[in-house]
Every structure is written in structure tokens, then in C-alpha cells.
Length: 314
Image (cartoon, rainbow, N blue to C red; front, side, top):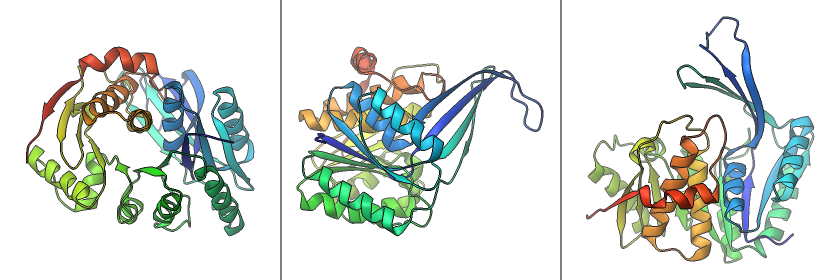
């Protein structure tokens, strides 16, 4: 299986989105509609990236009936399936969307524990895929009992093959991974606050925190800020990219869409200004959609001119 991009999905999920009217906690709620989608941050990013054209393969773990659904979904969407079958059950994440208020209630399972033998099988497949890839995306939560430095270990592996990497993680997994200097990172503002231990209330403080990452050797830093857009920077330039006004329907998958768009832009050798526009456009389009629906290439390209860029100094 030859793929330009390898997306690592160690703890994928199946998302069941249920729409109700006037959701009442603790009461009886009747579903108006429901849908099931393959999910998890890496799979979301892979689905967006695939719509832009590159060949992408997902490697990670799948188990049980929900794991079978993941296999089927990846096949239907033309995404390379390198998921390792395990005895545990792939997690189900429940999303309850209130049609009246637009609010989303999420209940996410932890996911199955991964046996050491399965980790070794995954690592062998990961190395095989890295031998032919140009880019690796490491995104999402780690399964229970997998050590916090596991992404850091995979970053080391990818570097040995000369493959560029994108890291989108939180907490200790992000902290440990940054020490291995991935090519690009995409923390959101809350994740960056946890990483730095600072409140980051001003644009200058956000810029300074991002500059610490580029000074450490990370080539592209994207700090997503929800409705306020993103700060996108490298060692030489920085932009604040502002989205156009939308009616936000769901934040689910918006950050993952940015990662997928970033991967496509890096493969094309895009300039930082173009990266800023396309990533914020991707996240904004996805945020305008109900439930767990994701942006498409055509929707993103049609929206690029709506993104406003401001150069940042300092």
C-alpha cells in the first residue's frame, strides 16, 4: 500500500450523532434523526485530505463491530486501510445535537486497551508505510495504557525515513511530542495554555508562545482559536487569519479539517499565506455543518477569498 500521507489513528471511533428537539437532561428525548460516521481526529483529517486528492492511508487499531464499520467506511471513501484488528471494541462517541439551540452534548468512550503484541504489529506496519510516504499525521488521543511519549517515539521513527510530520495532540502527548520537533503542530488555544501554563489573553502573548515553538525548530505552527480564526506562523512570518461570519452548527471536526487541509498544502509546497487561508477556510466550513459532517475541497476553495489575513510582527 503506497500512500503519500500516513494518518495515525491509535484511538479511532465511530460517532453516532442523534438530533433531538429541546434536549432535556434526565428526561425522555425522542430522536428526530441519527447518523453514524467513522471518526477520531486522524480519520477526520484523512477524510478531508482525501477530498483534496492525495493518497492517504490510516494506520491504527480497529476492533469488534464498530471496528468493522471503520473498515467498511474507509473502503467506501477510497482511503487506504492499514488498521490493525484487535480483540477489544473500537469506541463509540455519542453526540446529541439539540436542533432548537444548536448545542452539542458529547459522550466519548475511552477506547480499548492495546496489547503489547498489537502495538508491535502496529509499529511494523507504521515503518512499512513510512518507507513510501511523504508526510505523517499524528492526531488524537492515545488509548488507555499507551505511554504519553508514544507519539514522540513515532516522530523519531518517521524522522529516520526522512518523512515530515504533523502533530495534533494535547497534554503530555503534545509536550513529549514537541521535544522531538515535528515539522508542524496545530494546538488550539486551550491546548497551548495547558502546554505553556500561561493564560494567553492577548494576541501578543499568543504570538510569543507560538514563537517559542518555531524557535525550537518547528517549521509551521497553527494556533486555532475557534470563531476568532487562527495564528499561523513559521520562523519568518506570522499571520492572524480571520474567518467570515457563519452560523456555527458544530465545532466537531473543525480542527481536524484544518489538519487535513494543512497536510494537503504542505504536499503542494504552499506558502504560509496560502496555508493560513486554506486551513481557516476548512475549519470554518466544517463548523458551519451539522453534526459530524466535514468540509469538502470544493467548499473550501470557494471560501478562500472570505478569509481575512493580517500580518503579525514581534
